[in-house]
Image (cartoon, rainbow, N blue to C red; front, side, top):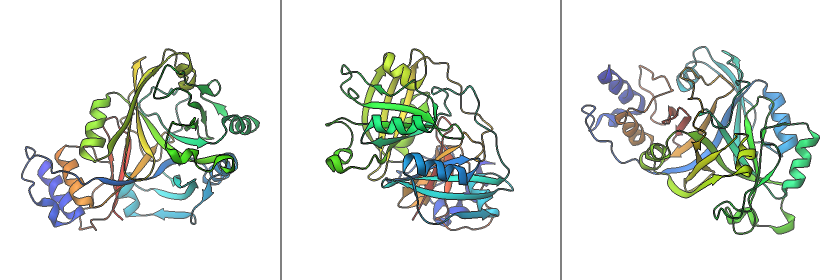
Length: 342
């Protein structure tokens, strides 16, 4: 079976993929660095409703037209047979979200009792220039809270002290974060422009719940080439109210590519009762997110991932396909990463 998978991957990514692959004992070849973290994708139940909601509350602007897709290439990429989708890219500052509605093979709703320490948790952190004004806007729209209210992280924490943040939910109960950085914290571009800054500035990072930070670093840093960009350990009543998890104590680590949002690992040191990523999750389920990573050359990355036995989401065609076709895989906790070559 393993030999068959190798042959299929050779067809998928071109003949050069076979070079140096003689069995499971072969060491993975060094992966070229990821060039950028691109759009963060999420599955929605009603595309029109979500586009209007994100535009009205988060100033997200459609980028390009609506796309509708059906057929074998979609089935292979998503791993959902018989899929038919509509999707739309929304610009949030200079970053982007891609919203996808499944017209066929619609999936399951998010669990009503989901918590931020469940390992299917993922969010995007949207930077604001004024937390109070942004919160008033959300309150006026009666958004569902995930945090009790905006929280100011304490000054004893050198990495996070003074940052204000708030978790809330979109119409499909995806968790989103508003984040405000005081001077000296965060990327300097979040401070640029002074009083002329718009309310919604962009996406700083996407955060994912992980079981083991070191294991996640081996995947994102060592295999995919992202650089480690910061660490902190957060606890206390403010953190617990932000996450909506009693006694929350987190190890937080961020990795970044040369361009685009960061990817932040949230390892709950306490409580450690978060549920694992569902083994039967599909791209049509409303807990689904996928993070798009742009690579210079997809074939060597795929070779390295195959050698390391990384789980595939994308079904592999039995006939030759361009080496630039996107490939979806799962990280060590089950979060979906889509690798694309320009």
